[in-house]
Image (cartoon, rainbow, N blue to C red; front, side, top):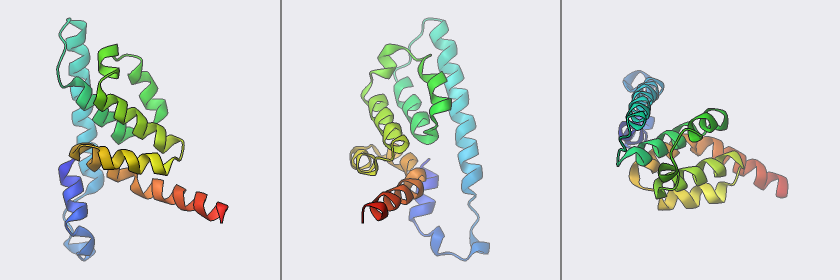
Length: 141
């Protein structure tokens, strides 16, 4: 997650295309595989009655990175109440709701208050949120 953000912010956009060695798509695919494996482990541990302190944090990262309501609904119904009630999960749910409802003001408000890794994951939604914001603003003008 941090690699994605750092490469974006530290100047890869200023390099010639043939000088860029970072593949954002591959990076996010590797992240998705890793977080999916972690979610499977959390599920297995829950079935054994073992709660993990950091589960809400990583579930929240998945929510923000996916932001796809069809995928998320199936996952959310499986999560225990204490994970859903965690502050990080509540923020992630607000971020996803802002993306899905085209509420760019709420999205950027959440971004200002987000922890570093969540903000890095939110970065992948910037173009879409900005585009929708411009559409809304141009219609109102």
